[in-house]
Image (cartoon, rainbow, N blue to C red; front, side, top):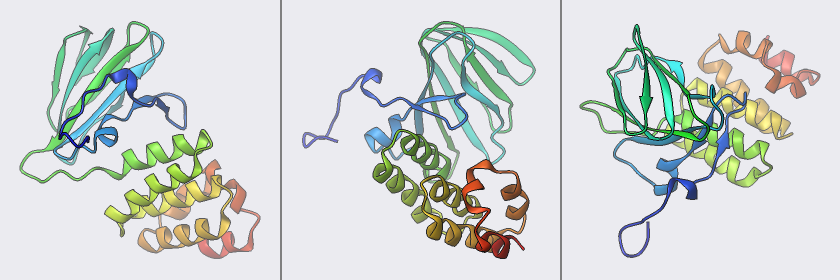
Amino acid sequence: MTAAGYEILSLDDLERLRSTDGTLLLRPLRRRLGFQPFGLNAWEGERPGDQVIEPHREPTGTEELYVVVRGAAAFTLGEESFEAPSGTLVHARPGTFRAATALEAGTIVLALGAEAGKAFTPSGWEDFYVAFALLRDGEVDRARAAMEDALAREPDVWQGEYNAACFEALAGSADPAFEHLRRAVALNREVVDYAAGDADLDSLRADPRYAEVTA
């Protein structure tokens, strides 16, 4: 936010951050603005067929609105599939399956969402998405700051501790990785099963502490 109390920018001014598996490309609008009222991000499909909204439901009660602001997308909403050209608004109620892929190169879909009747709190997934993307791009300090934002907001959530363990393992920081992994296991024993097949933790497995933590 500028000293004037407002900000004007283009979607093309935003960073482009690719997910760890390479299937999603985020333009992190909410973080760029420091926007607090509800979730607000842009997803881009560089090529036709690229995922712009990953297949999912929102079981926690989050309601979402998708706006195709550039290009065109093929949406699936519940049992219905349809094409959405630029200017289309797609409303997904809580629990409804939703997914979308780009039909044109450079398609951008704006996603807005929150849970009705509850104060919005940014989800940890957003911070960890940004953290892993920045780490892969070599921006370790910014990446760790994003990770720490998520942990500070949700200090007793096993998913955050587990993701932090993966992050530190990939960053080559074994000591904090084991600290986070130990806390994650204490919060949820099922973490041991997740960890067994997670390549992000491969750098830790030869260390005796790995067997100790996952025993």
